[in-house]
Image (cartoon, rainbow, N blue to C red; front, side, top):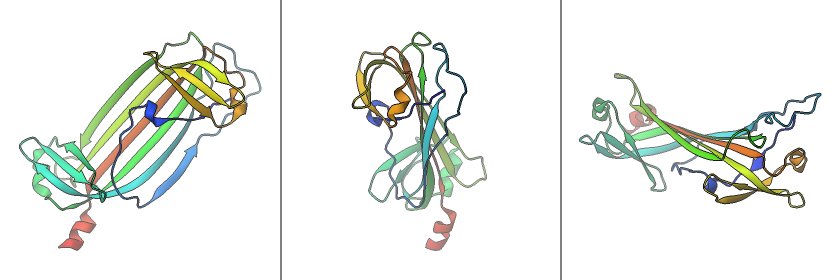
Length: 211
């Protein structure tokens, strides 16, 4: 079976910009293709392939709203991100100007499915969480976007594929390895899952240095 990995345009998905300075980065890793001694049947989807990266971000607390139970964080470039705080007592443990540290994960997985196995669709799920009472103040946001589009055009010369989404909009993307176009045909479906996650916590070490 062949895997199919594409250079995706994230503008086609619901991307979220997260501000912060990069301290460390893990290079994107991709799952290796699994060799197979037989040719996959037309009714079976090709195995999915994924890439991802993780970075460390830093910022400061720029605003605390105890009435609405929110906290706003600001990166060094001035961009802000506001969290809902489920436990309002957490807001008593922080103050404006406190340093925070976060870990940001971004990953994308792509899978080609045979025509008729599913229909073009789009979905977004989002979840939030906070630390337990007594623990270091922290919060997390997770967003997953799944987009399924139908292949309406394949340009083997330029190694580009045009996808049509559930509302009829089209997006043209470039395939990294042209060999992976073998066996792919107009009418097949491409499922793209885009994941973002951010975990932010009060940076106790930096806060202690400021005292």
